[in-house]
Each structure stands twice: as C-alpha cells, then as structure tokens.
Length: 105
Image (tube, rainbow, N blue to C red; front, side, top):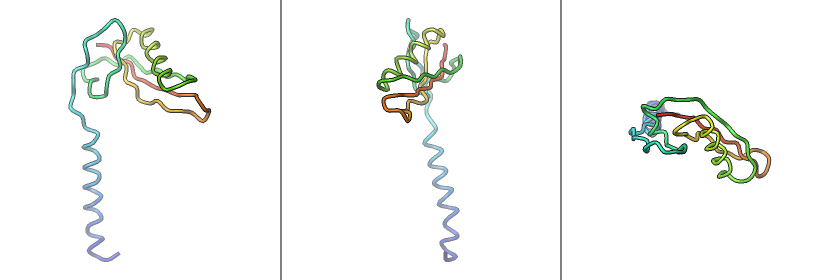
C-alpha cells in the first residue's frame, strides 16, 4: 500500500460506519389502536410501549404458521402488540423457528 492509500483507508472506514449506523435509525411512529387481538408492529412503533417479555416457537409448515403461533402466544400472554425479531428455517426441511417481543400499551 502506498502512503496516500493508507491515509484514505481510515476515512473510508469512518464513512462506511457512519452510513451503516444511520441506516439503523428510524423515525418513531405510533402503534395502531389497541384491538381485541394482538397486532404485529414494526420496531419504529415500539416507543412508549411496555415490554412484557419475549416468546419463541418452532413449527412445521411455512413462516405463516410460525407467525400464527406467535400471535396465539401473544394473546395468551395478554399482549396488545408483538414484534417479530426472527423468522428463520431450521436445518430440518419445513421447520421454522420464530422469536418475538411482546408489548402492552
């Protein structure tokens, strides 16, 4: 590496880190009105909500089966909202692992 390139590497790294971190910043939005059933929300809608805890499920079928299992667990826990943080297939075909955080108004 020549001297000029060595000078620009730290600058490039700083720019990349700054841009990357700003991509994680979101503008807070209000959650939807409370309904008779738990509703899925986005991370930007969690401000001001009380966190109840987290739940997870392993289901066979499709990702939608996992979402339905999380919604049922949220209803049993008395949550108004849930935020799905992970919905991924496992090493077994047709098996899904899903995690969510539960919130209350």
